[in-house]
Every structure is written in structure tokens, then in C-alpha cells.
Length: 495
Image 1 (cartoon, rainbow, N blue to C red):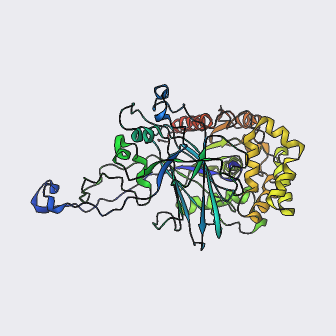
Image 2: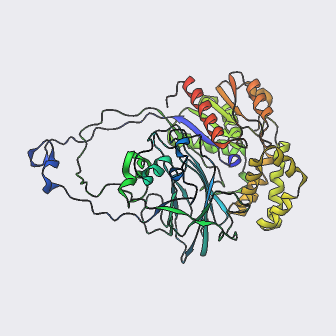
């Protein structure tokens, strides 16, 4: 949700110390694995979670599959929908969702938006493992996990090999589980992808809600356990799965042998990113509601940089994050090496007219339950105007009603839309940092004219117009990435 999650991008030089050298080899041999006595098959039980996809819509099984090569990621990008039901007898103190397979996914737990995921489509690894904290969204008793997924980027693997290998290489798989433990801690899962899941390629209204009847959906098609078939380890199609808890991904005839590293010969010195979750967002506590605001969020960001010992950073954000970043660039120029303002929702003045509907959402949510509040909001005449321009904005509004903590949502939405960056136009014109402004058409909440105005008023700014999410989410993500990578390269920040 762009209104609620800014980010800080910064350059970080990593350092490392030399590890103790290994001066002797087992058995006095350069290749210690030559002695079979020293090697052993690892003790590992294949994980039970399965790779799933929508039955009847698997590219590798189509007669015209040659028309959709794996190395053309722009093909076959329609969303697929998956649902599962599971029972929780005791609420854990921590729970983590893991998801692998899609290039993009939107995950709902008990009707609440748990996470939006997307990956770099230009990365050489076919797909990666995503994770999100699921602790607050779990409920005692019956739970529903719902996933909207778009296939991974695929790779250049041709049409040889088994159907299983081709499907995995094409990226038409979803693997998921919720573990009752903190990130990285292994424990028996509360739910895993298996043949009890149901799936469809047709979007249906309220498909993510627990009360939705998914009995008309077909059982999901399974490739079996993610470690249960040697064909799943071919062509490096599973390379991204090594971040999956407990995953070994190793053919059973192979053996392992542990060697200590002797030296560090190269240290990565490119750019890294910090994402700051503002008060009341993500895992950050709300704190005193009276302190909620853009200036406070900017102060928190500066405090974070201080804590990390970072003197200067490329500072940027989307929507609310753009307002925070602009405040930092104007009030803390010595801390700002460059500035990125994406889909800005504010200029200098507080309470932009198009954000006031969020205050209405807060008022309705304070007086009614989420379902009733949504009915009132959807009946407002302005909703038809927004839907005609940007259905994505409608989804964002609805997502606000689905947040698991309504008290926090009311506090945020009753204050932030009426706030401002506390800057005058002269302050904006005095920003000295090299600036990238990213904007789109067909975005009612974030008028393109705002982006154009800021690009014109900030002295060293350039404007990048990219595809709107309403038109194509993959094209929007790719355009955003290309604009940001080009800008950062021009600032001397290496990838």
C-alpha cells in the first residue's frame, strides 16, 4: 500500500575480516571427497509442501506451448487464484508466511491483506522466496489463506525434459506455508500447499474473504513435494528455493562434505536498501496517535540513519513516502545525497483534496464494522469517479478496511490525509539534491500534475512517466525499476 509504506535507499560499503585459513586437508589429500568413508548421505526428510498451479491452465501441457517460450516473461501473465482452509488450536507468539513461485503475489489471511510481493523480472534466478509476518492475522479456530499469483519470469530452457521440469522452469508453480515461529526458525507448519487447495484463473468478487464459497473451484494441480522428484532439481530451475526453510534440494545419490573457507577475495560494495515501516505500519507500533504525521515520520527516518551510523543517503518514497522524503531533503539537506519522489500525493499544502476520502474511511470505520463501512464508502458518488480512472485506487481503499487493527487504521487515516510536508513552495524550490520524480496517468489519488509540478519546481529534477498499475502492473514495476536504476547510476550508485 503505497500510501503507508515509504522507503529509504542508501549506499552501504560492506566489510569483512579474513577467516582463519585451513592449513591441512583430511587424509592429507587435496580432494578429501575421494575417500568415500568421509562422505555421507545427508539425513534429510523431503519437505511435504507441494508445488501447485491451476488445473487445466498449465502451459507445459498445452499443444501450443511452443508459442509461449519460457524466456519471454511478458507472456501468460494472467493472475491465478488459490485458497486453503486450516484450523488453529492455539495462537502462536510468532508466525511467518513463506511463499515461492510467483513473480508477483497478493496474499490475504482471513480476508486481511497480509502482503504484496513482487520480484525483479530481470534477475537471473527464476523465482525467489518471499516472507511476511502472519502473527496478528491468525485467528483461533478456522482460518483462510488466499493468494493471487502471477507466474515467475521463466528461463531459457527450451522444451526438452519432463513435463515437471518444464512447468517449474516456466514458473507456473506456487509453494506456501505458515510456520508458527519467527522468520528463519523451523517448526511444523500450520498450513502447507497440497491437494486440499483449490484454484481458478477467473477473478471473482470477494474471492479472498473467508465466507466466500470456493467449492466451485477445482482442486489445484500438484507437482508433488517440492523435494520429492529429481526433475524438480534440473536446469537450476529451483535456484531461488534455497531460501526456503528446511530446503535441501539435493538429489539422493549425492553426498555432502563440509570445507572451511580459506580467505575472502571479493566484497560486494554496491547499493543496499532500508525500508522503514512508519509508526502504525507493518510491525511498527502505533505509539501516541497525537504524534502521527509526516514531520514525525521524517524525524524517525533521520533517527534511523543516526542509529545505523549513515551520514548521507539516497532518500525516496512512494505517495506518503514521497512527502516524507521531500521533507527530509528540504529540512536535512546534509543527510540527502539524492531524492526519489514516486507518485507524489502532496505538493506543499496540507490536506490534498483527493486524499480526504481516507478521512471519510476512518470516520465510517470508527462508527461501523468493516463490512458496513465498505458499503457506505462504495455508495459515495466519488467512488465511481475514482473507479473510472484507477481501479487500483479502489483496491487500495478497500485494503484499508481490511487491515487487522482497526484502531491503528482509524488513527492513521484520520490524521495523515489532513497533514502536509510542512514546506512552503520556496522550500521546495531550494532543494539542492539531484531528484527523480516518477508519475503515472490513470492514478486518481496521485495526480500526474503533482509529479510534473514537483519536477518543474525542484531545480535539479527530472520527470519519468511510467505505465500506470491500472494498465499493467508488470509494466509499471518494470518501468519503475528502470527509471530508478538509471537515476541511481547517474548518481554514481552502483547496483
